Length: 59
Image (cartoon, rainbow, N blue to C red):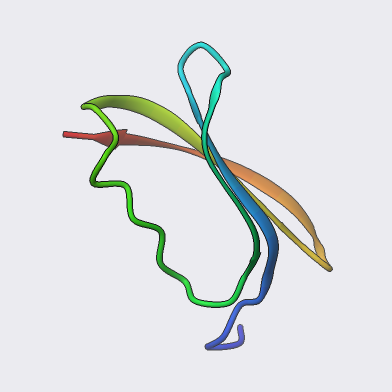
């Protein structure tokens, strides 16, 4: 696995499926989620190799 992941796009959706954060051409591996309320979210990252979605919980 490469140390640097260049994401084509990253989006974070709330439990209702609304996109709360969307970023295109993300170069760093960091997204500021400090403005999100506590709860469950889904993050979808798209690269040249495909797309993956993971669940996470913000406390």
